[in-house]
Structure formats: structure tokens, C-alpha cells
Image (cartoon, rainbow, N blue to C red):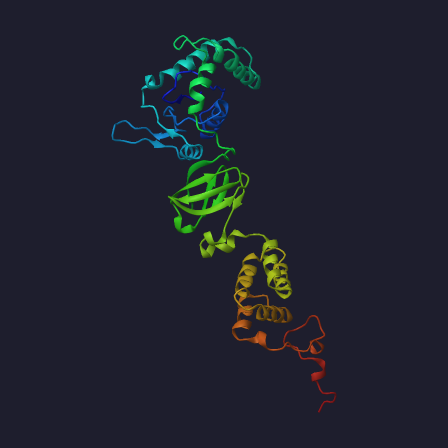
Length: 352
């Protein structure tokens, strides 16, 4: 139930719903439903000091309460101000408390079904046809009639477009340079490790803020999945976040077909030990050179069967990629044998 306060607040018109928690998402949604029910937004809303509204209550005249950031954003969007009730002072909004007792005694205590959807429909019907049409003992008027006559025109218009649900959460950046939001993981710059950030969560995005500075906005992913920006990771960890063969084959392919074949040869050089780190080192090193040199270096490495990172690095360091490859027609014709064996045509046909 939402208590509305205005200078002309006398009607006792109500909005009611049945909920089972006081989570911030529920709290905000009830506000939107109430504004649509009343056909307008009040100038001031007087909530209790539940955590969905007030993070820290004010216990003195000099102290200001700390409002929930999500609630503050809804108030700014809809155009109302928040005036929390002083702690342990229910008499400060006695009209609302009286309405709560009225609903409990006259509807809930007499309703026996257990179908929540049907209960909600019947509650709304009861509010409109019975509670709103009764003759109130204090005002001597029907609440709905007096509301439309004296209060409706004092409300501000409801925003034309319904606001996308927004929740703010405090999150901590962990050692893997990710924060956790609703079971999913989102990266932030590693230099903020250990810092508590604000996550502005909508159904489609998670925006990370450091105080009032936007850090990065991620698209939503499902529970257990990750959104990672390579630049957010320490340099020595960027390669380690990509652990699949297919990713590095694609990276090599983007450089050139020779590099792709070289990466494939390295992966296939051992049928048991995964050659991931060697491929990572080779591809990352080749990416630092012009494409033409990179492709020629990969071609030379393939020609001589050089699948070692140091060997490929030496080809580029000594500029061997700039030299033409030997004529293929003069290559050795045997497939195996001693590496120090001489070719047959090097022997003389006669012996002395």
C-alpha cells in the first residue's frame, strides 16, 4: 500500500496489492502501478524506513537520511520528492496505517482462497467497489468521489513512457577483474581491484560506475556467463582468458592463410599436450609485424618445419623472411632419414 501526501490529502483513496517481499524491484514496481492507478504522481511520497527506500534513517534534526539509489532515480524520473517517516513514529502517517488495518480486517480476514492471481483481482475489485464507495467515518464522503473532486488535479502527469526497471547494486571488483551481478560476471579495469563499484542494472545492460564516473557498460548475459573486455585485464592475463583452439585459429586466419596453417601445424604437432601457449606466443608476436612480413615468415617456418616460437622470432629478427625460399624442385626427395645424410647425386660415379 502506498501513502500519498499532499496539502489536500483527505480522501483516503487507496491502491492495494498483495506481495511477498520488500525487495527493491517489488518496491519500485508498486510505485509505478500506484501512479497509474491514481492517474498521476504526487508531489511528495512518505515511505517507511525499509531498506528499499532508506539505506540509513535520520535520527536527528541535523542528519539527512540516505536514500536507496534505485529509489532516488525513480523519484527523479517520475518527478516526486521523498520524505521518509521518522523512525519509530507511525503516528506521523496515521491515515495510511489506518487504511492498512481497514484492509486487513475487512478483506484479508474474510477472504479464504489461496489463488494469488484471483486474490489480487478480488482485492482490486473490493478497493474500487467497496472501500472506495463507502462513506468514510471522518470525512463523511466516499473516498473515490472526494479523491476525484479535491486531489486528482493536484497530481502531476504520469510519464508517457514506462520507465525501464533500474536497480543499483554495490559490487566489488575481484582478482579476476570481474564483478558479479545476478550470477553473471562483468569485467572492469584491473587497476580498480578491491574497489567497491556501483552497478546500474537494467534488463538489457549492466553499467559499472566508480562513484559518479562511468567505467563501462556491458550487455546483459545469463547466469554463469561472462562479459570481458581485454583492455580491462592485466597484460599477462589477456591471452589466458581465451582458452579455445578455435579462437586462436580465427586470430591467425585474420592475419593470413599462412599464419592459419602455421597455427594449425603447431596445434597438431602433439596429440596429447595442448600447444595453446605456444600458439598464443607465436600469433601475438606475428601480430606486431606488417602483414606481408608476417605471412612470409609463416611461409618460411612452414617450409623448414620450424614450429618453435624462438625459431619464428629469429626469422623475423634476422630478416630471413625477406629472402626468397629455395626452389621446391630442388628439395630433398626422401621423406625420412638422417638429417646429416648426403644426397645420392653428391657421390662420384667412379671411385679412385
